[in-house]
Image 1 (cartoon, rainbow, N blue to C red):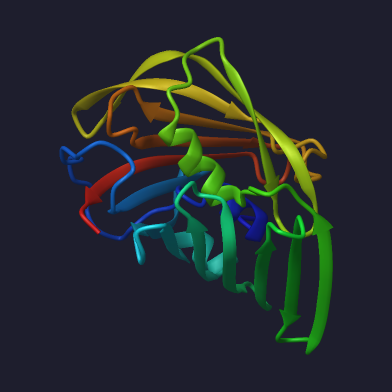
Image 2 (cartoon, rainbow, N blue to C red; image 1 turned 45 degrees about the horizontal axis):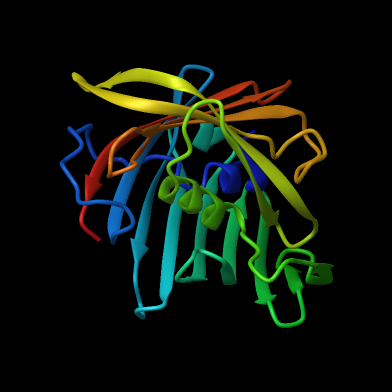
Length: 251
């Protein structure tokens, strides 16, 4: 099923109930925006989400993600997640909060970044079991959670054949994650063709997440740097999760 870690890996990735619309023109990234995505799991509609990027202060960015499962997946495994991340002007983590209702589970998670001490504190409260978990991991002076890492990738001009290493954490583990630019491809959605660069983020296979899999992303090769597609290739029972950008608005 589409669980919490997969939703985080697709944090700029799930869908909206709004009908598919052509993506509008946009100014150069980064800028405030609101993106809507469509996700398919085993060829069926799986969920919806809206992702907003705003600038609460001149030296800060904030991302919010509202996720809800849909269709048959919703009947099998209901997901209702609200995720908020505060970052500095370079997308380094400051704090994050996740309220997750997934199946019979209901959890609250919080990350607090302390660059001066090079630490990230993790707090989890299992609301159903009334249990708390705390953890602290060593980090860099600029540590990214998954959202900040993807935003950083969008801000870079990483051409095919090049790769970067980004320090990333989920609060339980910190790792230097390699992101590789693999090639230029044209992607067509809703009758519009986008020039894109395909990237792969090596977050699975015990790097950041234990699960085996691949995370591929297609970002437009222009100043907007829009994430038009994302694909997670996982083993049984999850399989492939495909995500497509449906709509882009001003935040």
